[in-house]
Length: 183
Image (cartoon, rainbow, N blue to C red):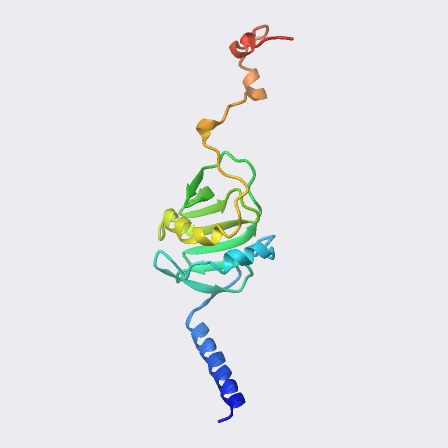
């Protein structure tokens, strides 16, 4: 058999095998594309996505820069979401990645903090733990360099706002201001 014929037969078998394998897993369709999903850095993260999270196998998606795990899906990943700015929302770190955490009933949304483009994972908190999600996708997320980090609330200073001034009786000076030197 000629070498060219063997190569063509091998390519045809590979294509058929690929179609057979992809037919075994269902497609997760209609995941909303993130605004910056075409950012080349998202591709870096996507090639490192794990094949499973906490025992749930990865499934195919039809949207760029997305991933999903479980049947039905227990977790959906999107790269290219808007990077969160300074926030008072809970921010936790896991394996070198900081996440802003939002609990929405039984569903959770964790969004990377200090990385641009940002990435988020939406998941069912009753079927998979937040720590499993954070740890399992952490390696892929670190492909996008961190440019910022969560701040420990103990390291912050509370600055009184305008609404706090209403509590100060007219004609008095707050203690902190009385101790400050005047020019």
